[in-house]
Each structure stands twice: as structure tokens, then as C-alpha cells.
Amino acid sequence: MAKNSIDWSPGNWPKLLYQFFTSFKLATTVLFLMLLVTLFGTLDQVDNGLHKAKEIYFHSWFINETMGSLPVILPGGMLLMLILFVNMTLGAIVKVRKRWRGAGLLISHFGMLLLLAGGFITNQFATDDYIALYPGMSSSKVESYREWQLEVMPLSKDGQAEKAWLYPSDVLDTVRPDEQRTIQTEALPFDVVINGYSKNAMPIPTSAPMAASVTGKEIDGFKLSPQKPSTEAEQNLPGAYVEFRPKNGADPIEGILWAGSYYFDPREKPMPFTFEVGDQLYGALLAKKSRPLPFEVRLDEFIFERHPGVTTPRNYESRITRIEEGQPDKPVEIKMNEPMRYEGYTFFQESFGPAGSNPGDDMYSQFAVAKNPADQWPLWALVINGIGLGIHFIIMLVSYSSRARKKRSATEATS
Image (cartoon, rainbow, N blue to C red; front, side, top):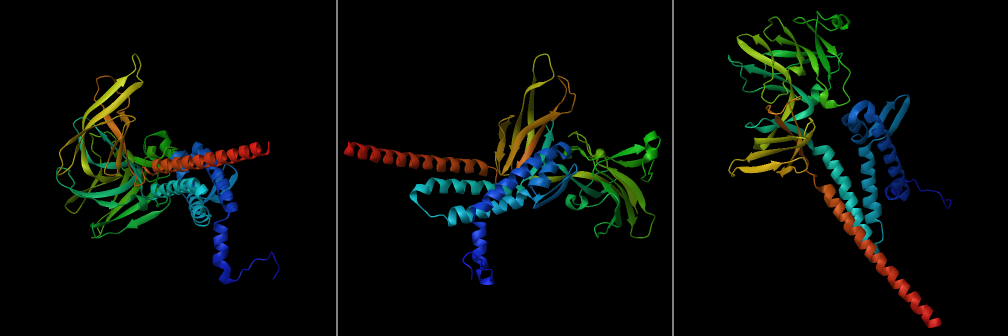
């Protein structure tokens, strides 16, 4: 066998894989590719918005996109972080020779691994929701900014619903605009048919001139016009043509569901599309996905201050009461830079409304609610990195001082 040839026999594969994943060349290549992904992801935010750009470039395993006329084919951010994590674990911690002089750098590498692991956990398990309340209102659930689900519920005679059948957001989002999907379930006495689903749409009266260019079906004097998705994903209002087909063979009921009927003022209730099957009244609507909280939040006071003579806010903060079964009520202040952290949730003072409110008007306070198991990991990672680099600096300083002393002593001895 030639001196520089590589042994590709199956028995040597573990060694070759170990050498590959511990190589400095691999680390350099991954860091360069991360630079490219960051560059393209940042540029793509102009056309697709922050949320979609993150999904395409940073939360993906592989990228196959076109930016303008330029094809972008790269490994995704998740794959690159996984390879870098393996490379640093094997190459910088397992393979490296352990010496007291390298203790600081070894500690710093642990900090960087913690940072990478925190990014993965955040991507897989973190949730990003909101809650909006007027003073005196309370709630024990939060709502998604971008996830919409189909809800069908039986209604009482006064229009109240106790429970709803849900078609989840992650499945609904897979319905194509040109697709007809039939949903059969034992929970309902009818089948639900979705005749196309638009992630952003607008119902248009057939009397409007622009309705002539809309190819969709006319229902109750309206057509559903698909719109170009907004670069800010939370501004999209999805819509769909739906059909409810009774299982007893009765005539189907057709309707248009539009997310705009879901009220965004916390005091208002959603307006469902209502229909009857047999003697039972039902309601259907596109609603934001909600998640329960392990406690209840009541807004006691919303403080809003403007700069003198202008409408620009100077400060806004909320005084809330956290209500939990078996625990005394806890008053908490949430300010713009002072969130509430409790039970893994973080409540940020995000915004207020309604838009165009004047001094003295009733206003609601909106909180961004994040649940992230790795919320504090970046902070811990930076602390560990700082400790490691501090130790490395001290070791290098002591080593340099020792060499300088020896050199000075040797010079004095020969003079």
C-alpha cells in the first residue's frame, strides 16, 4: 500500500469518520458556510420577513431557494450547528490533549457547546405567543401570533359553545390553494371539505368592480380573493371555502371562513360561520391556536405615558395579579425592560391598543409570552466563556511573567 493512500476498508470507517469530524478543516468550512447562511438569511428578510427567513435559513436542515435569479443551495443552519457541535465535542474536548495550560480554553469550549445546545432546544421546544387584556380582565391562556386552526363547535340556543372540534394548525397549513381536502371524523355528524386554503386572503363583495377578476365561487354575495402573503407573518389573515356534508345525505352547506372574523380586540368574541345540521346549530371559524397557562393573569392597571405635545409613547407598563390555585395572589409589575419570569414563562411588555387611542380612552395591554426551556442558557454560556477566557488569560500572564523572569535572570547571570 502506498505511503499516503487511505485505507477505505469497512473496518477502518470508524477511524476515518472520527478523523473527519475532529478535523480543523471541517470546523473552518462549517464556520464559513454559517457566514454564508447568515448573509443570505439576512438579505432574504427584505422579501420574506423575519419569521419566514428564520424558518428557511436558520431552522432548516437544507436550503434550496432562489434569491432573485441566484440559486441558493446550502446546508441549513440546524445541520451546520449539529456538525459544529459534534466537531467541538470530539475535536476540542475529547481529542485534545489535556494540559493545565489549556484549562481555560477547555472551559470556554464547554460554554460554546452550551450555547449551541441552547439554540437547538429553543428551536425545537420554545413557544412564542401573546396575551392582550383590558384592565379588570383576566385570562389563563395565550394565543399564537401566526398559527391558525379550524374550529367547529356545537352551539347552544343562545350561541354559546362548550367545546370545539379542532383541525390543527400544522395540518391545516399543508392544504394547498388548489387542493380540495375532505376531513372525516366521528366527532361530527358531517364531513368537512376544505376547497383550497389561502394563507392570506380577503373576502370581496361581488358588487365590487375588483370581484370580476376573482375566480373563486360566489357564496352569500362574496368571493374569497387570495392575497400575497405579508412579509410579517403575523399580519396574514387566512381564508378558505368550506363545505359541510351531512352524513345522512342531506344537502351540503357552503360557506367562506376568513380569519378577519376573529376579533383582535380582547373584549370582543369571534364571529363564527353558523349553520344547522338536523336540529343542532353549529359554528365554524378560523381561530388562532391557543395554549393554556398553569396560572391566571389579571390586569389591574395599565399605565401609559406620552411625551408632552405628541402621541409618541414615553413609557407604558402593567400592574397585574398572578392567580394560582393553592397560592396567595401575587401582584407583579411588568415594564418594557423588566419582564415577569415564572414557571418557565416570560411575560414581556410588548405593545398596547387599540390603534389610534387618544388620552383618556380605554386601552389594553399586550404581553409577549415566551416559554423556552433554554431561556437562560445563553447567559450561562457567556458566563462560562468569560470564566474560561479569564482563566486562560491568567495562565498566559503567569507563563509570560515566568519566562520573562527566567530570561532576565539568564541575562544577568551572563553579564
